[in-house]
Image 1 (cartoon, rainbow, N blue to C red):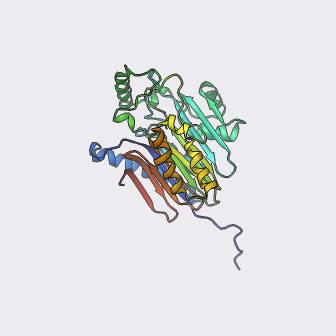
Image 2 (tube, rainbow, N blue to C red):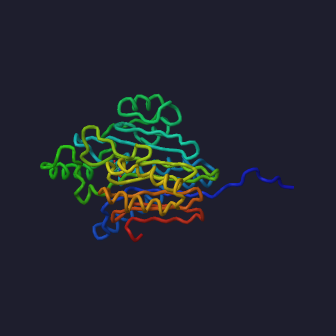
Length: 323
Ligand code: ASP
């Protein structure tokens, strides 16, 4: 006689984004669109494979993000945007819904996959967030792979910086330039997953905003702004104009609405993205999922690179407002 299983495997789901912004169908060639769709599908499948074989949601979100960090298409890892000084400075964060554990890193220039460093900070240090050279010193103790800053740099991103600097001449020194077509595709990457044990994890990785200066830090590495996970509410990863996402504590606010107001995740995400953020002038979006595995996208821009594999195993990939 078969023994009754002690704990049955729960549903799994994963949702990812590759940045929100002004993404016009008319301005994107079929070839470029196909490349984005292919890489998004590969990234979400990499995360889903982990979940299917009973792996942890934290490993699923990391697997998905590493694919996007390694791709030059997205503003994370290779292909990240340039700072005003002509370098790449990377931020990342991860959070677990089971115990609210979290790790974050900001301003690293040589760690190949910043999301791996965020995870090590969470797992192997007594801290939540490390910055710059200190973070890189810690990364060396973790045997993480190092690369020259040039590894991250692409020609397209350099042109974006030149364009941004040219347009920036009359602007206040601290104003990030975001009003060019290209730089308004924010391009940050993120992932949220639910594993068979019912644990949610959320993670985000970015180069920040083109032409950033003075050590600017956006929302992506800030727990509660760009990333949040709580098994009793939801998991969220954000992309958009970080200054606004920090001020509105976007990721936490969405989870708090689910937890304390008892509204569903879709309602909570839509309220924050389409009302709270719009009121203060912030553009961007989020992906998220709730403890049942219900996947949600919300964005107030013309597009958001996104993909999911839901609890029934169905793959969805989208870029524009209408998929
Ligand atoms: N949220 C990121 C930041 O402000 C940018 C992005 O989403 O692409 O750093």
